[in-house]
Image (cartoon, rainbow, N blue to C red):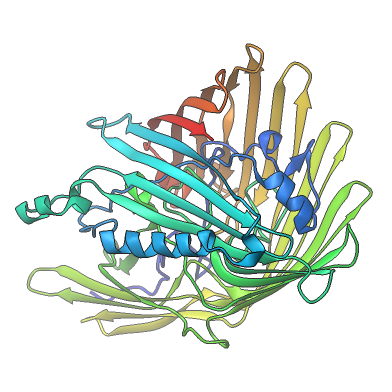
Amino acid sequence: MKPVKQPPKHPFPFRKPHHGAPVRNRIHQHGLPGTKNRRHDPTVSGSARQHDAPPEKELQRQWVPAITPARQHDTSPGQKQRPCGTLAAWRISLAAIVCLLFSAPAIYAESPLLWRGSVESDQRMMLRDERDWAWNENRLDLTMERRSQQLRVTANVWLRHLGPSVVTSSGDLFDKDRVSPWNLDIRELYLDVPGFLSDKLDMRVGRQRIAWGTADRFNPTDNLNPPDLEDLLDFGRANGSDAISLQWWFNHQNSLQLVHIARFQPANMPLGPFSDLFALEFVLPTLHGDIPISIENKSVNLPPNNLGEGSTLAARFSTFILNTDLSISYVYGRDYLPLPDSIHIEMDQPTGEFHSSARLVYPRHHVIGADMAGSIGRLGIWAEAGVFIPEREMRTEVIVEPFDWHEEMVALKKEAYLKFVLGCDYSFSGGTYANIQYVRGFFHEGGRDGLNDYLILQTERDLLRYHLRIQPLAGGVTVSDWDDPKNHYAWFYSPEITYHGIDNLEISLGGFFSDGKGDHLFAGLKDKHMLRLKITASF
């Protein structure tokens, strides 16, 4: 049985072949369930995003409760999960934070500790099969800050109870971490030095979130932090990176930011009901039809932790002209999602079973970006674009035995491709808000022929003197093949109702529904319908 030469169907999560090249795909938060609400975003003024400000002014607007949706603790089928944390790790991490924030050098002698946070419970239930719990998380989100005229130290920590018990043997009953899983996550921990060496130069060092771009959660210029894909319904979330950031202020409206990230950190994969979306599959074509093969063993080849291979360099110039934010940027880094550079498949002839393995790597690329955000009356508008230039052509070596088939396939061509977002929002009189965006290319898509089109929409209405907010229309639609849209489409819908009649308390009840056809990402969300209850108290 001699196989017919044909590229793999799914070289890696989200990537499919397109004209001989494996490609990628993407998702959205309150836009998977909906979009980030620019209307209630503290970084948005009216309908347009505020321009960057020096640290003194930034401090004044940071103390707004930041409420972030949740995560899950299930593993993909058949995968044994390790304990979520240990007492030793908790003590070491907590001790480090306490020593840093509560140490009392002279510069902090008169400075109090500032803190804010939230307690959140996020519960989700599948609407199909056995009505399984899809998500179970209880989180303490705590931000602490200590500052003076010379320094500011900031830490953001999540302490969470995650999911059900992960007991698989009687011995696990003696391990409380497995009986009652929990997790400590240091999201950010950095030091700000305003006026470093010059009144016009600010420095930030440590683990930090460096968010670039003006679009609403879909940001092709935001490439400095690895995506946190653990909870796909919390789209737009990213992990902090260990970086040094220098920002030079030419004046109050113009600045140049330089960033160096010393080591590469990949994106973490989703958990729970969405974990199978990232399964690596190879379709073996034969004279008797295609045979899908799930890749069993996947080794990851991370780049060396040195200045040449592991670091990321970036620069961004920002300005504010005619009530409009403008910026241009450049990033020399790596893709946070890997591609396979080799796939090996071997068939056991007596049984007909296939054994497979793959090696995954993270390609280098250059990204040249630009973005703007402004307003025309009550209409907010924004646009953002990134030109991605792979450093070299990426090839996948495929070996199939005992057929003696050896071939190299193009996984990513060395040609520039453009991702962009166009969007607007409007606040109507009476408490109605609408937000719409057109997206060309999600974060996991790559290659000139591998980008898809997405339309994302969100509407809101405030009722009962703003004590109740309904989100009747929130979701999106995509078509991956305009020549055959009936068989290559997907849609998702996430209505929600939120009660906030009590100060600092929000109770939200919503759902997530989806359907589609084809082999792209959103079609993989088919039948993953669920209900969601989230209660958040901020302080």
